[in-house]
Length: 203
Image (tube, rainbow, N blue to C red; front, side, top):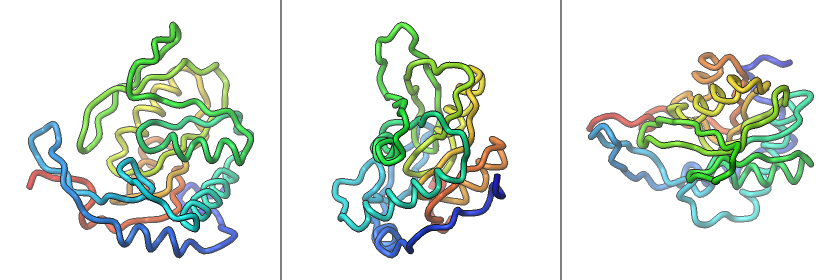
């Protein structure tokens, strides 16, 4: 496997994606600890409402290229609210099964809950228990504090699932680098964002 901190080669540049990230409007959200989390409304993220075709094309191609970093992948895992959209795209293009983690209970008998704590929310993700020995890659839109990714990876590893790594569109505040070191799996991002306004603080 290539160096975990390296980005995979891309067939083309991503000027439209980079422009969309630069133009994202900053917003603030209260976090459960009484502070304020400042972040950006990225069009490809959970609060995005419109994406131009060139941005979609660049993201889809980039995520599929990133997936090629890993060998022997048997399935993908992607969480709501922002990751499952891109998980569907990658699963379709790569012809792989997709396991979606929902924000509400699925009411399945084999349901597994994954408690997550991010910079601006606490909650639980729900999904079916994956078969032991599956080799999966997590697909998400953004990694920042890493709370969502840590919850997913920790739960899946405890189930005996082989987590090969994760692919994300945007890494904020060096989230991909930190999570690669913390979780000991490669976290590959298409785009890095400066850390100036990313992980929220009490303001």
